[in-house]
Image (cartoon, rainbow, N blue to C red; front, side):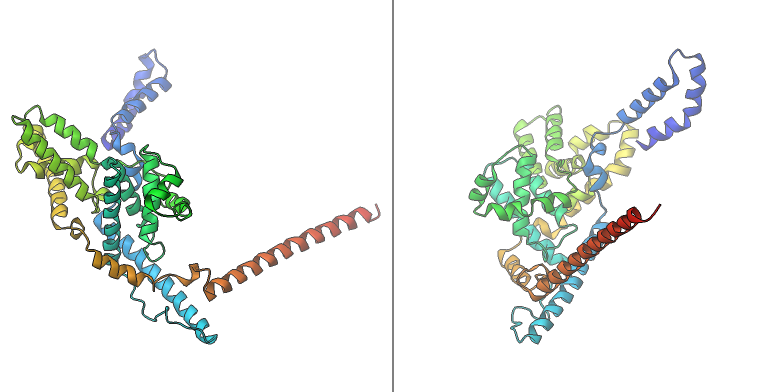
Length: 375
């Protein structure tokens, strides 16, 4: 796309010169040039996923560390304040330890990975397609980029993401039927729906590697001698894509790149890659310099990322248990600081209302004085 734009800019002088001998107006030519440059842009590059949900591994790590650190600082201060008020009123602080054992970024990711797999298990039991599962998991990942498990429990967010994913992927289910099937109250699901939508920036469409993987599968049939073996390759690639959902690959690389890497790993040989990208010297050089490093990095992540392995229930339970002591008392309506801040907030609102009323009265008095004053 950059080349197309630069070319049109550099060629603007020539285009203007040519209008003197052309029967078409300059506006039409400019419009045609714009449409041509837009046409050169890949469809995926026009998606919100490409524009707003791409990160480097470094930026992801920094963002998660920042969100985790800010949450620990805020919640820690609120817990200390709540403890002081309870001690002053001779109340128990048993459920407010001084060191609650805040989860690290790695522990947060482990707990989220546990619930990501729960989504896959439930949707598999409901016999829903892989893209519905993938959408729900990506929703979870996007939500917890700017939120923490200390503020919103992943189990609650998981159910809301699952409900939204069914709607997005056109596997509709009423909230009553969904809440009954998942054995949860409709309120617990709907209460977080707006918050999740806001965290997703109301960008619900998610592109997954499954469709390009199917395209590669069809394309490979042109060179495959053994269809049974090819089907096994495709099945292995699809499972690798399932595994990729638990990593950060959806933020790092394009769906087609993940799909091709899965196919390359599943083939255990470069026959398809050789056929597709090594047909001439120019294509081979571009593949070696740009695409191959990406495919190898995806393979490395699938081999080395600890989230590719299932999180043990005991590990998730231990983290989950500590979360009970990491809840923010400022968000608990039964806490002392919640009541105190609410009263302060109400008093401020009352003062603002009184100021508005006083201003209105003063304005009326001024108007009456002006009306009653002699000409």
